[in-house]
Amino acid sequence: MLEQLLQYDTDLFLYLNNLGTPTWDQFWLVVTDKLTFVPLYAILLFLIYKKMGVKTLLLTVVVVALMITFTDQITNLFKYVIAKRPRPCREEDLQEVMRFIAKRCGRYGFFSGHSSNSMAAAVFAGLLLKKYYKNLIFILLLWSAVVAYSRIYVGVHYPLDIICGMTFGAMAGFGFYKLHGYLKGRFITS
Image (cartoon, rainbow, N blue to C red; front, side, top):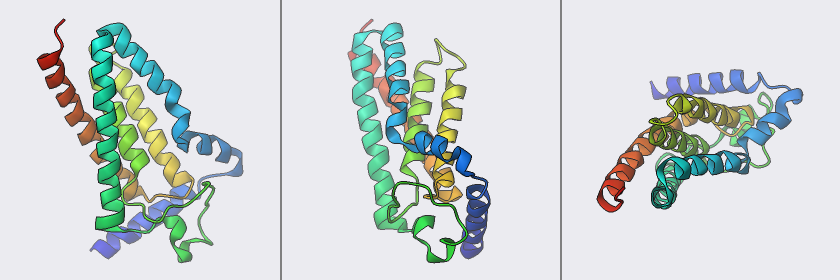
């Protein structure tokens, strides 16, 4: 059954990956670059500062740093210790039938760090700012899905890597949102 699931995953990867065209390659390389969304993060931090003040902003920076460290380390644990599933760009039998446009190809891919980090940030920031910007969470979730898809497009992750990464990221984002609320209630007085 696992073998069949992995075959479906490979088939879906090849279908989605081969939808790409040279016309769109540069766009997706920009989307998949971690530094592309630094301005978005800066805007989110500014909105938190504007609506909640400097103390909450400082708490948020600490909690977000912990959240990203947590998601990165758990992702690496799964990639290098538990799953050790090679990325599609490392599979010899896929080399001739897939599009690989990424700058590099890491060893293992299960599960996607880009997907888990972007989803954790989307859920965390979306919930934190929901009171002030009710539709922001939907925009951030869409952004996270686009970042996740970019990993398939450039040839470095299977769809299951993405789905599991996004699921883990959503849980981490929610958990750290709750932690933020607890710490804010405990240590920050209005």
